[in-house]
Image 1 (cartoon, rainbow, N blue to C red):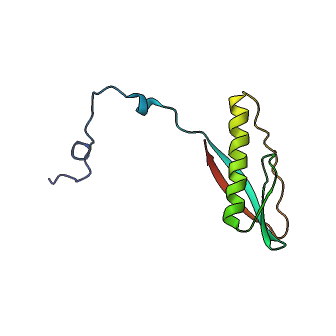
Image 2: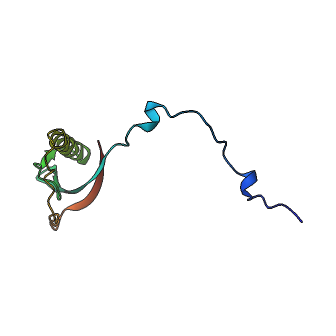
Length: 109
């Protein structure tokens, strides 16, 4: 009888009895999904959040607009968390306009 290459005894990882370090027990970063609508408007790009109360951002490029909106959203969320306040999520999120593209941007704090 032949031995299968998938037997657990042949494909296990070594087990270590070493204690956990502070780095291994730190909390994982919080992740929030920011729904963003982007459109071209009068020679610029406008980005706005559909599910968070932050001002829209106008910039020369989509990258700059998204970057500015993400920075504003992170700042707001971090401030609310540090003050133990509720994050002002818009629920349900607003709907996109006819010319807007929808993106979901994960915010890692």
